[in-house]
Amino acid sequence: MWVAVLVGLLATVFRVFGVQRANDVFIDEVTYADIARQIADGHMPSIFGTPFFLHPPGSYALNAVVIRVLGLEGHSTDLVLQLRWVNSVLGAVAVVVCFLLVRRLVGVAPAVVAGVILASDPFVLRMDGRLMMETPAGLAVLSGWLLVLLLLDRKSGRTRLWLEISAGLVFGLAIAMKDMTAVFTVVPLLASVVWRRTVSLQTALRILACSTVPYLLYLGLIAASGLFPQFIEQKSVGVLRMMGVVQMTGFNSVHSVSLTDRLIDLAGRFGTSYLLLGLSIVAGAVTAMSPLVERRAIGLFSLFTGLVGIYSVFFGAAEEQFGYCVVLAALVSVPIAAVMVVKWRPRLRGVVMAAAVIMTMLSLFLGVQARSVVDDGLVRARDWMNAELPPSSKVGLTSVTGEFALMPHEGWEVLPSLQSLHDRDAQYVLTQGRQLSEGYGFAAPEFLDWLEDNAQPVFTFRGPTSGDTVVWQLDRIKLDAAVAGGLNFPPVSGGYP
Image (tube, rainbow, N blue to C red; front, side, top):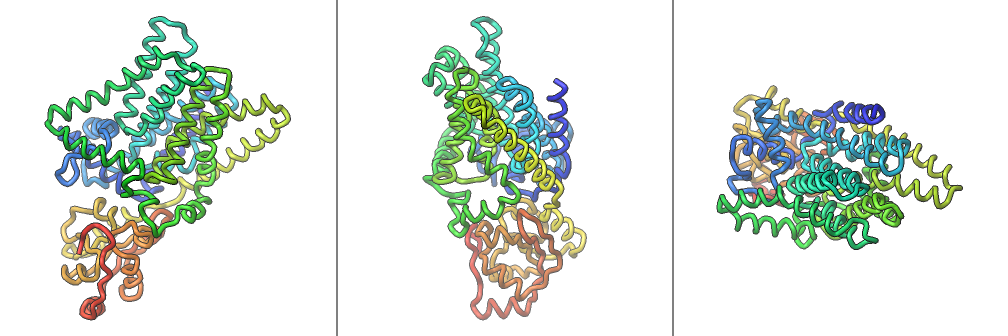
């Protein structure tokens, strides 16, 4: 047990260090913090006054409890920075659960390797360092599978029944936090009934029945509020987005950005994570061939999780958060597959051990790099503008994250074109270089080029997430002349003028 404690402490140190400055504020974080506050105040989740059912409320409800218990308050961005601590703790617990899973299946040494890599994995650290629903959902997924393994080697009886109920409810909590986790829990569980009778039909059905309870309670609340039609409408759009029929977010929705180029660009930060993403399917397939029931169950979990990741990259909404559970599954299945390969081919023992050492050292290096970087440009820009600009200053915002993270604020509004800056008498404009240049903001990339040639930067911060976050002081003479000459650079999204 002391080994698990040490692994947990390592994971906690990695996640606590730099929790508020190692990752720039992400738009989803601000949305989730605002929804959590609504639930804490006793309201149904909504965005801009419209009920929000795209994602279930499990993770928001958890954060709502934290808000109520600790009395957290302030702007949604300030809530984000405070609630990030919750995911830091939950992420560390997930590392311990991963260790326990691997230790049960292949022993302490492989479990230590898996635990250390997961504790320091740069991609997982990025997700655990943000207020994202993937962290609590991923913890529930791993915990549910641990309970499944505990019941598989027990004969029928009261203890096994309680483990089945517990596993189902924990899987249900995962689904109530993010619907997609049904593919990481229910689908491989049902597949295990067919695949070499890994799990009995009766056990699978009992777990499945219990897994529906949290979501049924959620649906009952929606129906009682008379909002079921809105739920069906939004959930249908969400399913189409996940399938890739509707491309609204992710790399596949922005044609100006090459996913391959982006992966190459980020390989120096997330190289080990990308390797794990690729190994999930291979390791899952190998593990699913094991003669041992417990290993086969985990192999199916990893296989289906990896398949979802591959599908999202090529056909679906290729959002980076989709890879979170894939990495978790890989770090459970890869050690098992490695042990099985060594058993089949003993001469490969040295190669496998060397690969494990190299992977662990690289992950530790990239993890330290990920947590030591300062990448809080938007918060720094906000604090600088509040401290240095006159209260009456008119500031134009140009990105989606800027809109959600900085508004409402007197004098600040979304002004993503030369015409809108001119019409609203703006004096300053805030830009995030990477978002605008890659087509993720409201303003056109050419808008940023014009600012570089015709405005004066009065605040600049460079970070790996947003590139250059800049506050520009506008030259009214140049702005008026550009608009008078018919130059505008219309916004590329958002419906703003």
